[in-house]
Length: 436
Image 1 (tube, one colour):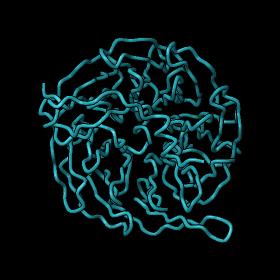
Image 2: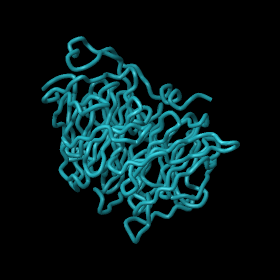
Image 3: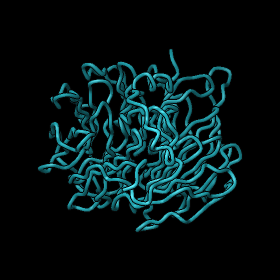
Image 4: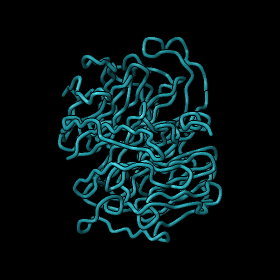
């Protein structure tokens, strides 16, 4: 069995063309790759080796096209010349295929009634996954749909209610995804689709990618808002799942629990996706801080222990990234932090990123070798060095309005979605290698 990073690369990396030499002041010349799912091909915010690395940012990036978009918090994804946007249309969560060249619409398929609460707009909150000729869309109320890439025709769909999941919404004190909607993007590997459903024996469910048939289901935990993350820890291939009750390692073969670290917070608001490196899992949430978890092999089972906690670096609704054994992310309330993942010590922190509401600050990060590109909830891009000594800014520019979405980055172009109010917003494609 291949390692998960290898699987992702085989499925996701598509070489498009070589950059022209005229772009050299802004980028390192490389082949480009698609951005087919949340946080990129390997869903960890790391640009693949053949991606186009930015060395600075133009003061005013060249906007190639800009179109109106419906409400929603799902991030755009880009693959095979198409952008996929999940939005509210006619009060339905709707998957839309758009030309990456000019922003023209190819098709739109309405899937499920929209969900609204006090946390955001009426619309989908889960980023789609596009693999080969299939588009996978998970709706807020707990339905999973597989669509044809070319036509948008539904190939199969599943309502999690048939598995015993009861969607509650913003009522009482029900924690996790059943409260604010399913945001945990499905994981597609080979012929299987893995989702976090919740309920008895349905914490994690494996479906056939071809037919939607149930393959296996396991555990009794309720899902938070983070998606399952593939990793190999202590020699064992597994999924790292952030449930309402804590972080759990799950066997890829059958869903068996391999290890568990409890983390309990108000309403199970576990948003930040875990990260893994050298048998250390980095996970955390508001109230419990950022934590380093070491996974080791015991006599017959894996063992997990918390080796450090860092309250200053506690993530809220932002997902951090790893570079050279250091974690870069947004701490509480709106600090950019660099943390050594071996010791858990904060190496440096910086407050120069700007946010319209620091108490609800959000930033998305893309690792570009030794640089990191950030997009703040205020719509500002900032490129900085992945320095282990201090914050070193390399460029800054305003790209869009208020947003809570991860951008897609392909071929030197960034695709961003703004507008978290009820009137919707825009989908913007801008070239970061060229000034306006």
